[in-house]
Length: 302
Image (cartoon, rainbow, N blue to C red; front, side, top):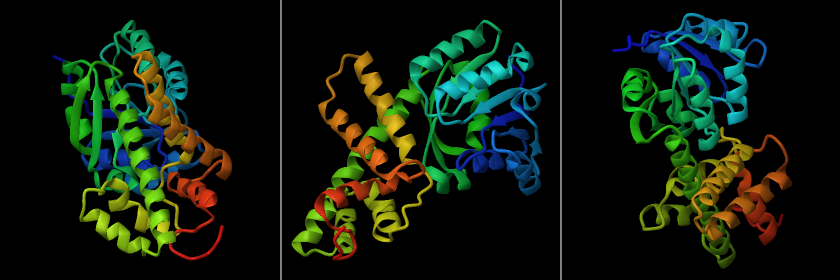
């Protein structure tokens, strides 16, 4: 039986990774972090009591578990290459990136050859639930490896779903975001129609939340980030486009017709091209506003 996890290397402490790693520190794990942004690891150590490392290779020496949460599977592969000298049989890699299932399986096969197990555990819930440790975690991998990771995952999330073998968690995450993205777009269009008809969009959100049109966007995004004009939920528009592309990739691999999903992805990609790098995913509403010539929450023309 594998030893319990005590020492954790956490690679990637961005908007999501920082609070997730902080919750591991609070739970009593010995956490060492590394990040590509200069000074960020030191700032994390100063604020949380965790440890900082100059680079991933240093962070992963002698640990029981390596956690990655970076933008893409390409960066996960690069991280695994950089820490190869530190990897030892018996280590567990938990990739919490919203990555490509097929690429993750390739990485897992390489690690298995070194006696290192890998599971994929992408998350949902955004920065607010990352801070409170209430993320939903979609897990893929062998049951024995998931059992070993249980205490680590429970320090970051309250809803852990075992979805199948390695890559299954990431497939589920991409499909979850597909459903979320579709609901967001259709909700924005409904608000625009209603406002142009003469309805108050804030009142529309209240009615939707009391009716069958309710979804995550009506509950947690439309008033907070669109009608307020804040557009700062903390999840990048480019990352949503990436996740939708992964969902379509899974669709192609399974020969599943996806006409609505393809349209949804194109709408989000068009918004990303319109708004440019750095836009929050909630700002996708601006694409529909541009097309309708209407700004939600006011009578201004775009």
